[in-house]
Image (cartoon, rainbow, N blue to C red):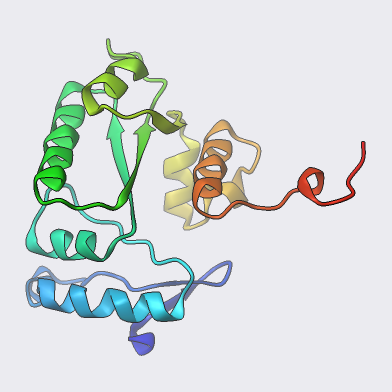
Length: 178
């Protein structure tokens, strides 16, 4: 598996998806079920970005997961789809820890974050604001927390990361004084 990893910045590695849809069709849920545990043996964190919906490959990834980050924007279609997926996970008795993230959380579209929390039955852990910095960082291939570290979106991404890997700050170190 390591031979197929692409090094990225900040000591990260990627296992990129197939460039050709025909090649992608040759990847089955059995492959996912074998590869993810191998990666988990070699890395502290394995992040899998799945497509929307619950196809066999996504379900195989979810079965390997210890934590799920459920992402929705503030529109009825996204929230309903995510709620349907959450209900399916409940029905399948998938016990992974779940975190709700709201994307484009400050969009003025007639819903408020509390609406998403009510429908999902979960508190929002992180609210990523709508900003041009996010697609700009994606297009540049640079993490937002590096390219615009003081932006509101970067702060929310750091807050989300702290849920899984808290960073020790100067204040929390023993003996720190003001």
